[in-house]
Length: 557
Image (cartoon, rainbow, N blue to C red; front, top):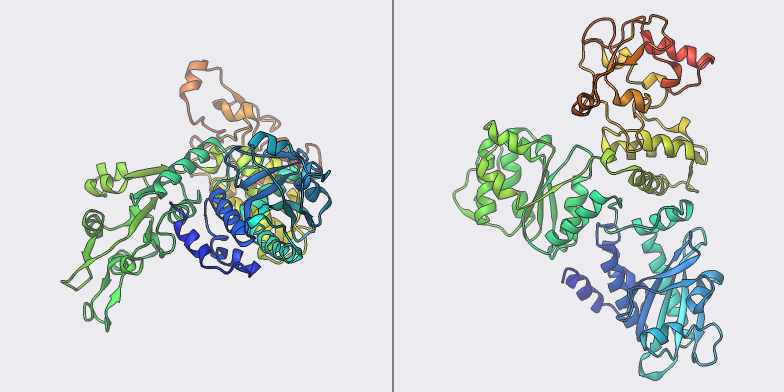
């Protein structure tokens, strides 16, 4: 079982200390742990601490006005859903306070329907709310039937209240809480989560979650592919944290940040006297991570001589330190990541073919943010707002305006999740209680950052690709029709509408995956000095002073 070490930690805690229930697992709250498994074992520990037969953790579904069981001793049902105010848990979620029922027979707040469905008989019950820092009830902790046939007393009430305070604080540090608050503001999107801190519910991300779950149960080598900023290190940590090696080190080596001559020493260490200045034996990352996981980032930058030594580690789990002859045995798991096309590098002779096949036992391709859809962009944006609020100790979490949200969804994010995070953090720091479009320091803001601006791309540079957002709107300030059609000069010199689409056949357009953008007077150039783009395409109203300034700025900065 992947959380066997967690259970062992829990079993060692004292039942008379409420804080010990959460403190025993507090180190996992900030890691990429499987949230469902974490919550189920947390409920196990709470029931054990309270000497109860069963325990349930309910969360509030704000859009639907319901509570649902997220973790429970409930083998008969997959999930319980109750309206706010229905049953004891629903009453606590709506009104707050502690409810202690020593006998359920004549209790009007007790809902017997669940017992009828499950066949379980509830005789005594104790429930307390989970309250966040804003005094909002977002969940309920409930324990059933004190062991030995007794009832829950005042001491049990105080103990469960102490546990609920600790659990509330712990859950507020997870992405689950962020999702609950996001669903409260955007009810059309249901609550979705899997691994803590790994945000996204799009189809590509759900497929990645399934692969992580399977890979984490083994010691298989994992290769992560994806553009820069797609979250490869986060996925690598999720693989490690949800494996049997979770209590051992997770050691990262960034091959792109080290000179080629130092990578071998960093990975394998060196012996005393191996080179000038080597005054003592120095263990490498593989020895430091013994029993754990080594994450090799930017694998494509690894020099060919070092690739051979890495292949030996993968095959035999052994190596020699630099300047040494003694063979060192290691027990590590290797997770590697790259943004390069390793198959092409193999064909070009720049990457060992045997290492390539050995390292991609489990291969995961992380999608760029533009391929994950607008819902994932919104989930990530709201998550980063919550994170930035905590990081910068702001008194209140800013509200994300609808205009800013729609603009964020429309951009194609060439820097992926990293670019979105930096954009949102900047907006949170600079805003006045609400994240407006004017506070977003993003590259697509206004005419000054429009890709039609010659000062940005230069007149001799190749025009960048024209990605489209999932909503069908061109992310680079052009309409969907212009983004999908091939372009040529219309012959117009008025500057009002300097471009028009050619009349190629639909079959020809279908084969053109990257339509050529508007050209200036010179072939292969950007806009000529006197060429301008329509003001509306630059994101400002036509006919205004701002529009006229935008046209002047975009044409000849």
